[in-house]
Amino acid sequence: MRRSVLLLVFGVLLPGSLSPLLYRLLPERRAPAVRAIEIAPLRLEVVAPRSAPVADEDTACRVSAVRSQELWGGATDRLRARAGAGSLRVVGVEGLDRIRVRAVLCASDLARISAMDVEVRRMGPDVTVETAQPDPDGAPGWSDDEYARIDLVVEVPRGIPTAIEDGSGPLTVTGVGDLSIRDGSGAIEVRDVAGDARIVDGSGSVSLDGVSGDVELEDGSGPVAVAGVVGSVAVDDASGDLEVSVVGGSVRIRLAVPGAVSVREVGGDLVVLGDGGAAVRHHAVRGRVSIGGRRP
Image 1 (cartoon, rainbow, N blue to C red):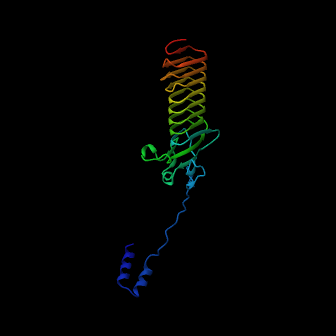
Image 2 (cartoon, one colour):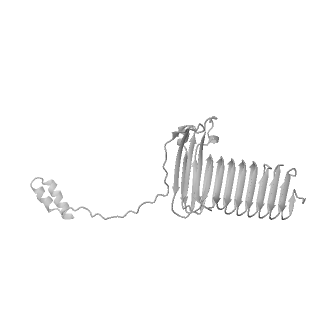
C-alpha cells in the first residue's frame, strides 16, 4: 500500500513519459466481489387501494370514496374498533382467516373528505380499526348542509372478542365473541354473541338477541329489547321502555324513570329496583319476583 502511494505521488509530480510507467507499476485494480443476497418476499399485511374522490349520484353524499383493506397473517385474539360519525357493522364470518374492512367515506366537499382516513393496524394479537374524520362539535361554523361520515363494514373470524367505541350512527354486530360496546348515539343491534355482552349506550334503541353468556346494559334513552340470553341480565335503564325475554339466569333491572317493562320466561329471579311508577308485567318467572322492594 505504501509503495503504491509513493509511486502515485511521483507520477503526479513528474508528468510526461514517467507517468505511464508508474501507473503500470501500481497494483491492478479489481472490481469488488459481489455476493448474492436472497431477499425474502415481503408479505404486506395491509392492502389499501385508495380511490380518488368522485361525485356521488346520491344527493345525501356529494363527494365519496371507497377504501378496502385486508389484514393478513398472525393469530388475532381481539378486535378493537373506534369509529366516529357514520354506520358501523361488524360481522363474524365462519372460516375467515383475516380482517376485511370496507369503508365508504362521505362528505359535503373535497376539503372534508381529504381529512378522512381509516387505519387498520396490529399490535401483538390485537387488531385495531380506527377512523379519522372532521368533528363538527370541534369545528364551529358547520352549516346544516356540511357533513362528514364514514360507513364502515368489518369482517372478522367468527367468535373473536370485540371491543367497540362508536360515536354516532347505527351499529350492528353479529357472530363475535365477548363483546364490549361504548356508544354515543344511534341504534344498536347485536346478534349471536358467543360470550358476555357489556353495553354502555347514550341514546338510541338497543336490541340484543342470542347471547351465550351474561348481559350488562347501561342505557341512556331509547327502547331496549333483550332476548335469548343463556346467562343473567342486568339493566340500568334511564328511558323506562324495556322488554326482556327468554333468559336462562336471573334478571335485575334498575329504573331511573317510569316506563313500560315486560319480562317473560326467566329461569332465575326477577328483581326490579328504582322508580315505583313503572308498569311492570312479568310472566313465567321460575325464581322469586321482587318489584320496587316488594314481592307481588
